[in-house]
Image (cartoon, rainbow, N blue to C red):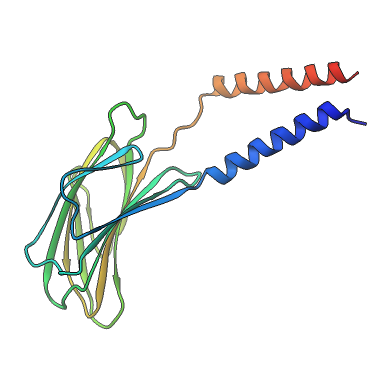
Length: 197
Protein backbone atom coordinates (compact mmCIF):
# COMPACT_ATOMS: atom_id res chain seq x y z
CA UNK A 1 0.00 0.00 0.00
CA UNK A 2 2.74 2.51 0.96
CA UNK A 3 6.21 2.50 -0.55
CA UNK A 4 9.33 2.01 1.54
CA UNK A 5 10.34 5.67 1.12
CA UNK A 6 6.92 6.81 2.39
CA UNK A 7 7.25 4.53 5.43
CA UNK A 8 10.76 5.84 6.12
CA UNK A 9 9.55 9.43 5.86
CA UNK A 10 6.59 8.72 8.13
CA UNK A 11 8.90 7.11 10.71
CA UNK A 12 11.31 10.05 10.47
CA UNK A 13 8.49 12.56 11.05
CA UNK A 14 7.18 10.46 13.97
CA UNK A 15 10.67 10.43 15.53
CA UNK A 16 11.02 14.19 15.10
CA UNK A 17 7.61 14.79 16.74
CA UNK A 18 8.47 12.40 19.60
CA UNK A 19 11.82 14.13 20.18
CA UNK A 20 10.11 17.53 20.18
CA UNK A 21 7.55 16.31 22.74
CA UNK A 22 10.23 14.84 25.01
CA UNK A 23 12.38 17.96 24.82
CA UNK A 24 9.44 20.27 25.44
CA UNK A 25 9.61 19.96 29.24
CA UNK A 26 13.18 20.02 30.52
CA UNK A 27 13.75 20.98 34.15
CA UNK A 28 16.91 22.58 35.44
CA UNK A 29 17.89 23.69 38.93
CA UNK A 30 20.86 25.43 40.54
CA UNK A 31 21.32 25.55 44.31
CA UNK A 32 23.35 28.09 46.29
CA UNK A 33 24.25 28.20 49.99
CA UNK A 34 22.64 31.31 51.45
CA UNK A 35 21.65 34.03 48.99
CA UNK A 36 23.47 34.16 45.63
CA UNK A 37 25.97 36.99 45.34
CA UNK A 38 26.21 39.01 42.15
CA UNK A 39 24.00 37.96 39.26
CA UNK A 40 23.12 34.55 37.92
CA UNK A 41 21.88 33.71 34.41
CA UNK A 42 19.59 30.77 33.79
CA UNK A 43 17.98 30.21 30.40
CA UNK A 44 16.84 33.69 29.24
CA UNK A 45 16.60 35.25 32.72
CA UNK A 46 19.12 37.09 34.89
CA UNK A 47 18.59 36.80 38.65
CA UNK A 48 20.33 39.53 40.66
CA UNK A 49 20.37 41.87 43.65
CA UNK A 50 19.61 39.19 46.25
CA UNK A 51 19.34 40.80 49.67
CA UNK A 52 17.87 39.65 52.95
CA UNK A 53 17.33 40.63 56.54
CA UNK A 54 20.31 40.04 58.84
CA UNK A 55 18.48 37.28 60.73
CA UNK A 56 18.15 34.77 57.85
CA UNK A 57 18.63 31.14 58.91
CA UNK A 58 22.27 29.95 58.89
CA UNK A 59 21.20 26.87 56.87
CA UNK A 60 19.46 28.97 54.18
CA UNK A 61 19.71 27.59 50.64
CA UNK A 62 18.51 29.23 47.45
CA UNK A 63 17.34 27.02 44.57
CA UNK A 64 16.59 28.58 41.19
CA UNK A 65 14.88 26.31 38.68
CA UNK A 66 12.82 26.34 35.54
CA UNK A 67 10.57 23.99 33.65
CA UNK A 68 9.20 24.31 30.15
CA UNK A 69 5.64 22.99 30.00
CA UNK A 70 3.63 23.66 26.84
CA UNK A 71 1.94 26.63 28.54
CA UNK A 72 5.19 28.65 28.81
CA UNK A 73 8.33 28.61 30.92
CA UNK A 74 7.98 28.63 34.70
CA UNK A 75 10.88 30.04 36.74
CA UNK A 76 10.93 29.24 40.46
CA UNK A 77 13.15 30.50 43.26
CA UNK A 78 12.93 28.71 46.61
CA UNK A 79 14.56 29.90 49.83
CA UNK A 80 14.71 26.97 52.25
CA UNK A 81 15.98 26.82 55.81
CA UNK A 82 14.98 26.63 59.46
CA UNK A 83 12.85 29.75 59.88
CA UNK A 84 12.12 30.48 63.57
CA UNK A 85 8.50 30.78 64.76
CA UNK A 86 7.24 34.35 65.09
CA UNK A 87 10.35 35.91 63.51
CA UNK A 88 10.02 38.25 60.52
CA UNK A 89 12.32 37.64 57.53
CA UNK A 90 12.73 39.67 54.35
CA UNK A 91 14.27 38.45 51.08
CA UNK A 92 14.40 40.53 47.89
CA UNK A 93 15.74 39.98 44.38
CA UNK A 94 15.39 41.11 40.77
CA UNK A 95 14.60 38.96 37.74
CA UNK A 96 15.26 40.37 34.27
CA UNK A 97 14.52 38.97 30.83
CA UNK A 98 17.72 38.97 28.75
CA UNK A 99 17.76 41.72 26.12
CA UNK A 100 16.65 40.38 22.77
CA UNK A 101 14.42 37.63 24.21
CA UNK A 102 10.84 37.92 22.94
CA UNK A 103 9.45 36.65 26.26
CA UNK A 104 7.94 38.71 29.08
CA UNK A 105 7.01 37.83 32.66
CA UNK A 106 3.21 37.68 32.93
CA UNK A 107 2.35 35.80 36.12
CA UNK A 108 3.53 35.32 39.68
CA UNK A 109 2.81 32.80 42.44
CA UNK A 110 4.05 33.02 46.05
CA UNK A 111 3.84 30.33 48.71
CA UNK A 112 5.58 28.90 51.76
CA UNK A 113 6.11 25.42 53.15
CA UNK A 114 5.04 24.89 56.75
CA UNK A 115 5.35 21.42 58.26
CA UNK A 116 3.82 21.98 61.67
CA UNK A 117 1.31 23.93 63.71
CA UNK A 118 1.29 27.69 63.57
CA UNK A 119 0.17 30.11 60.93
CA UNK A 120 2.93 31.74 58.92
CA UNK A 121 2.20 34.87 56.96
CA UNK A 122 3.83 35.73 53.63
CA UNK A 123 3.47 39.02 51.78
CA UNK A 124 5.17 39.30 48.38
CA UNK A 125 5.40 42.74 46.77
CA UNK A 126 6.25 43.07 43.07
CA UNK A 127 7.67 46.24 41.52
CA UNK A 128 4.76 46.42 39.05
CA UNK A 129 2.39 47.26 41.92
CA UNK A 130 1.08 43.73 42.56
CA UNK A 131 0.96 42.37 46.12
CA UNK A 132 0.49 38.68 46.88
CA UNK A 133 -0.45 37.40 50.33
CA UNK A 134 -2.10 34.49 52.13
CA UNK A 135 -5.46 35.17 50.47
CA UNK A 136 -4.13 36.09 46.99
CA UNK A 137 -1.26 33.74 46.19
CA UNK A 138 -1.16 34.12 42.39
CA UNK A 139 -1.91 36.67 39.72
CA UNK A 140 -1.41 37.49 36.06
CA UNK A 141 -0.46 40.91 34.72
CA UNK A 142 0.64 42.66 31.52
CA UNK A 143 4.10 41.48 30.47
CA UNK A 144 7.20 43.03 32.05
CA UNK A 145 10.89 42.46 31.31
CA UNK A 146 12.18 43.32 34.79
CA UNK A 147 10.57 42.54 38.13
CA UNK A 148 11.77 43.35 41.65
CA UNK A 149 10.36 40.92 44.21
CA UNK A 150 10.28 41.41 48.00
CA UNK A 151 9.08 38.60 50.29
CA UNK A 152 8.25 39.31 53.93
CA UNK A 153 7.63 36.18 55.99
CA UNK A 154 6.47 35.90 59.58
CA UNK A 155 7.37 32.28 60.21
CA UNK A 156 4.87 29.82 61.64
CA UNK A 157 5.45 26.70 63.70
CA UNK A 158 7.73 24.88 61.27
CA UNK A 159 8.19 27.08 58.21
CA UNK A 160 10.84 25.55 55.95
CA UNK A 161 10.66 27.48 52.67
CA UNK A 162 9.50 30.53 50.73
CA UNK A 163 8.80 29.93 47.06
CA UNK A 164 8.08 32.27 44.13
CA UNK A 165 7.17 31.01 40.67
CA UNK A 166 7.19 33.42 37.76
CA UNK A 167 5.57 32.50 34.45
CA UNK A 168 6.39 33.98 31.10
CA UNK A 169 4.37 34.63 27.99
CA UNK A 170 3.84 31.88 25.47
CA UNK A 171 4.90 32.70 21.94
CA UNK A 172 2.33 31.45 19.49
CA UNK A 173 3.29 31.13 15.86
CA UNK A 174 1.66 33.57 13.50
CA UNK A 175 -1.08 32.09 11.30
CA UNK A 176 1.01 32.79 8.21
CA UNK A 177 3.92 30.77 9.68
CA UNK A 178 1.59 27.85 10.35
CA UNK A 179 0.20 28.10 6.81
CA UNK A 180 3.74 28.08 5.39
CA UNK A 181 4.65 25.03 7.49
CA UNK A 182 1.49 23.22 6.38
CA UNK A 183 2.14 24.03 2.71
CA UNK A 184 5.70 22.71 3.04
CA UNK A 185 4.54 19.47 4.64
CA UNK A 186 1.87 18.94 1.98
CA UNK A 187 4.52 19.53 -0.69
CA UNK A 188 6.90 17.00 0.85
CA UNK A 189 4.18 14.37 1.13
CA UNK A 190 3.10 15.04 -2.47
CA UNK A 191 6.67 14.72 -3.77
CA UNK A 192 7.17 11.47 -1.87
CA UNK A 193 3.93 10.02 -3.19
CA UNK A 194 4.80 11.05 -6.75
CA UNK A 195 8.27 9.49 -6.44
CA UNK A 196 6.86 6.24 -5.06
CA UNK A 197 4.53 5.74 -8.05
